Length: 313
Length: 186
Image (tube, rainbow over all chains, first blue to last red; front, side, top):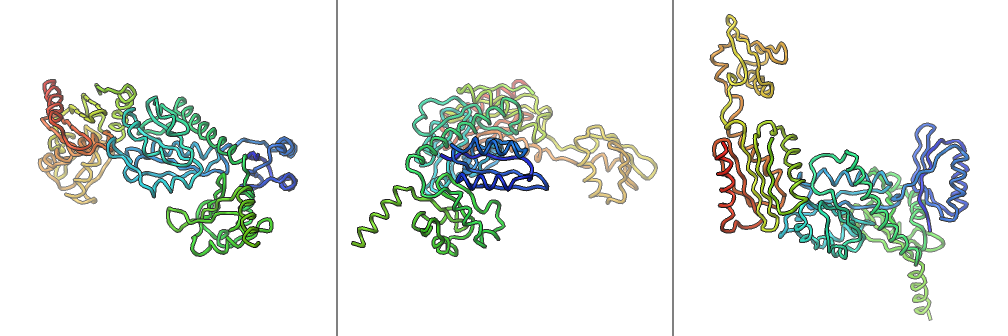
């Protein structure tokens, strides 16, 4: 299993760090250099974490945990109206970014009201593009219970954030954090900061569980390796959107149009195979602005190989 | 501001009192409200927000918020309620032009070739506009899904009764009861 961590220090002897990451089969997820300071977010095989940590300390840096690095999370509110935005939805998104995640904030078209709240298929499919979703609902227990249909069919882990303590919703989502509700001011007091930490910890727990499930049937390649290949593709390099390549637990989002680039990307090679053979490449449901690459598992590839062999015979 | 919240949901009661206070402070209306009574019934759903204002909404003139005196052909204004300073300045600029209005300090300004009587009568804030802002701030405090609203206004008391779909028999009466109780306090 891979563990994501961050080196924070100077550029001095950083070449040794990159060499070690390469030697142990790890991947550099993100690199930021500012003058003589350097921060590197990397994904390292669990058994080699201590060796890498020792080298980081030896070259004068520190190692910080970024438990949500390499994930993209949607923070969903009932609407994008001023009743729900920017607090607490943006506060939650900001906290998740501090934990290393890439976040998006999303409002449903008709998520407000007790009897009239609804989610459509398109919205649900957009939410399912992310590694996890945080639903931030309001202050009344009865209303939140009536709105369980908003998230009950979402097929990615859901963390429900609400005001009152809820009962009987455990089967509809993966974790519940209560005590937030509707807010009109920034969450800046100590108990509110603690609540935000609690939300990030719950998200970390549900994603940890998802990672364990992925480990049971590992991916054919680590998403970071596909990122390294795509970084050299010129349209990605030239893309001006923030984070043109966003890692997911089981794939990667590439922020360039599907129609123009899907075929070229599909024909790129990884471990002697074409990318389209080891990944599912689909357009994002938001619009044609990005490509979603989901990496197949080792057993899926073995099944595909067996099928092809049988067809040849 | 005295806030009285009646709610069937424990968490909702506490958080709505805070929410009401925060939103009113944010949009600068907290100082105008003497008393608020909020009834929250998410089960029905029925929401009643009633506020008693410190003063009945009416047209405000410069004479209400400043002292005006003649100084030869000019007039001198001393602002007594600073909240209206931008409105005063705006109206004077419109009527006499920027070149004629000289703001010496935060509270003092001189207007060239202007009669003190005319300045005293100038309207700087209309009562209707003020009421619109109060009703808007109450809508903003209410839950977003509660779209069907009815407003009662009597003197300084403004009450908004709201539900999600259709008003059921008795809902408006319930709101009117609270509204009358607030008027009775006046």
